[in-house]
Length: 84
Image 1 (tube, rainbow, N blue to C red):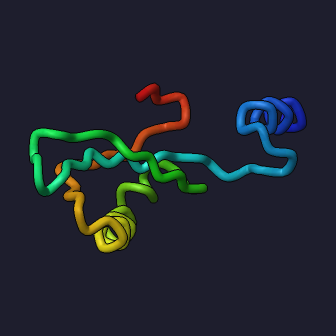
Image 2 (cartoon, rainbow, N blue to C red):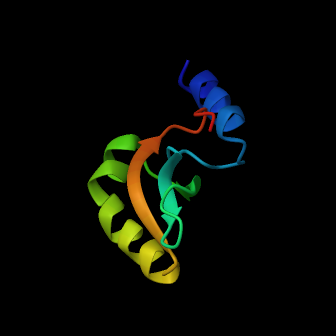
């Protein structure tokens, strides 16, 4: 049974030896010049939802520093099957 679960997980993740969960950090970002112009950006992480939620803020701050013309309005962690 354990081998069967491993094979299903391997097919689901799509990587040969990946056993770690996969999560998206979804950011809703808006331009500073036009605050009503917003879009979603996805950052991928090899962690579960709980870890993504617990450690998201430093990644959001780094992303914000790298994109000074955009501001993060909201964020959430989502599973890989989440359809934006």
